[in-house]
Image 1 (cartoon, rainbow, N blue to C red):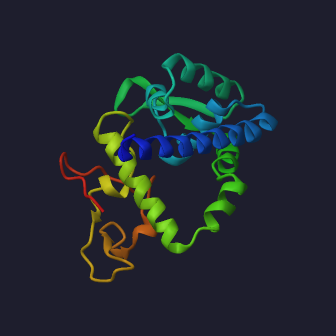
Image 2: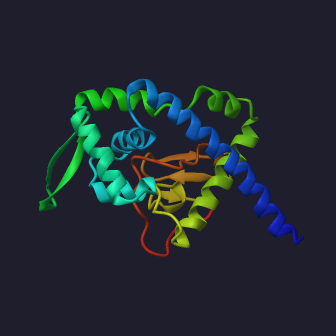
Length: 203
């Protein structure tokens, strides 16, 4: 077996185990609230990204539009989301969290405690390498069209890689005007603005 094929298989096996854990954790947190994992996913996305159309939620969650529509309809009945006219298109609507939905979203958006402990157990160097590896993998999948565009440092117009001589903090964020290292690379940043086509940075 070729080494690169073996590596991909082992990474896939590890990610599958993590994905299984996250699915189970989402079920456990959703069930007491009378929600499904898809519904909690909708709440988390609306909390993190702001008002969205149903089609956007479906793409980001990786589900069909009917599945997303069913989840949204249930959340509307539970008074957790509401539709408002899209300011960019009066014929369409965007989904907004209600005050109740925002409170629930704040709880379900927190990472599972067991995962937080596992990440905290990594050394600073391991955490930095982990973030960098995840960022590069997600960027490659995004560039291949396999996943929806993500709000990565590597795809942000404010990201300046390796502009500082400090090995611990070689990168620069022009949005906050500060140096930072791989351990602070963001995989989902609310201040993200897409870089021009072909201008994605590589850390």
